[in-house]
Image 1 (cartoon, rainbow, N blue to C red):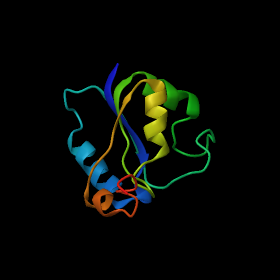
Image 2 (image 1 turned 120 degrees about the vertical axis):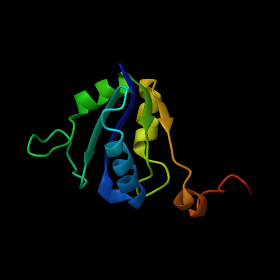
Image 3 (image 1 turned 135 degrees about the vertical axis):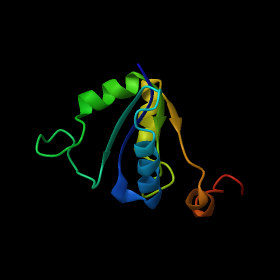
Length: 110
């Protein structure tokens, strides 16, 4: 159903705001996508008083997406990477300067 999805909060990493701007410029593109970006992180996605996608809808979008954008949060990887794989969607990460300079980037090259 969707070529890709982008479901994230902008406030946890500067790169997320940049990605949100790029996605906004793509609005109306021919690719089918599901994009929901919020400004601030909320602890309970199932609380009807916030603007987050509830858990059941989130899972449905991942299951229906070929790719899942998984931008860095507080760490280079985020839980979305693992959720996408579990749903059969291919996670897409960004190898930006923050990723390349992160203290854990070469953790397996000892």
